[in-house]
Length: 171
Image 1 (cartoon, rainbow, N blue to C red):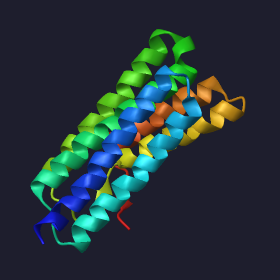
Image 2: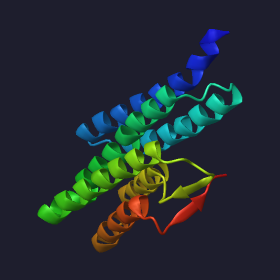
Image 3: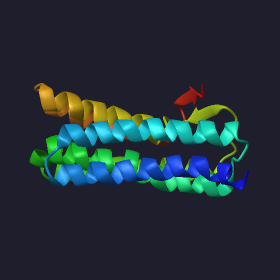
């Protein structure tokens, strides 16, 4: 059945759709909804890879599509969410950290696409970092949070995505 080869790509595109909806939610100041959409996009991202392996339809196209979608859902959407929710008041510092997060996520995805994967991630995957930013944002919609913690966490997660020292075994 040739259609089964497209099932993982449908989950990847659902991931992207949720990321775009998360950005739209930010425009309406629906920060909790935005964070939840990013987290659900992470679940779709997890499913696309599992389905591609299960159906034995892993492809270069799927890998590229996945990275492009992940950049929006776990790089851009969480960065903009955190900027709008917490970092905007810090001015140029918040803008810089927002950019750094998105740029490091982009570099991490590009590096992953050209490397041979041997079961160990070099740097923390953007999906995990974007999900953590979404969780921090969700937390900060309910509780008072330290702005310096948010700034530091965003910088650490940015570094963690591109670090060659941090290694994470794939489960």
